[in-house]
Image (tube, rainbow, N blue to C red; front, side):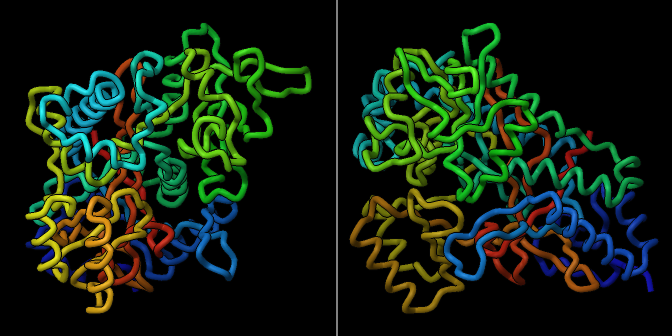
Length: 476
């Protein structure tokens, strides 16, 4: 018996593959046609071989909170998520606008703070962010770029419109899954890929290296990837990107500050390092400047950076711009610096630090999603409609004890894409994390990581919480 989508139900959600009337959306024809020529057993076999290939490639992530073995593959679903060219053109414009404005915001709040003086953002909102780093005041990063690599999380609302869910400007992860999902798909359905006009993403490591070289003034700069080490949840990605770019993967033991420069230990002695793509949180970078207990940082590196003798991507201090309370001000930030309305809207956001918003959140907590300002990975959040009374009461106490640390948003259903569940297709909720590089210009990679909430009805797409991923095709 052949695999078929004929019994697939959109169930009232915005579906990426089918319209509410059950018509196929643009770009899916070659995929659907090919898949429905396969028996259920053959389709299932291709799904299983993709999973085996992931394991063989060693594409894993670590889960710290579980006792039974911490290393896992991120589940992959072989039904792709397809975005048409006109939708993508709007996403691209919106992301370029957003990153440009956020970069200007960072330059401003670490120098003249004009946005505070003009009353657009209250100064206590900035100063109370745990990612606002006072030592970065007065610093000018190379080429005045703060945000070199961004992963911006997008969702689609009920009408199919893209919205920004959150900004990830510190050490955004997941790009290795995006790249490997595409390679897997080429192996799994080569005939479909050949028939569909898909924009390429395989040049990401080349573009990343090009950008990292651009931020150095040296003609042939030495670039390294700095990892916290093998126990980090994204260690596979650190080593993968270093290998793809043909640069050294280093940790704190390999680097030292010597004679005013950052140098790498090699078999031939010290070698000056010009650019560091850091995958370490800001406050662990330098125990002399930030966290004195850090064992994964390089003592004195911040002074070398301040003196313009090493470039760091992303620049220390960028985390203040992905604080979830600052997120609520991004539409105003775009208007202030660029004089434009946001192309990609935010999700409506209530700031618990403001009295009227806080009152509304406490009275309607059962309908809202409440998030901690600086948490990531699906942690530190309450999904009101799916929570118990006891959980709601606990979060109310958290909010009252530390209102600055919480925001709330309406529960948005997220669009869905068919997924292979046992031997048939069922809709599962997804988000999308495109990757943006900022070098000589802002470049949006045409695709991104589509993360899937594989548990039925779940809205949590994070891999650490049982989520998986899909290949994302952007059409020409």
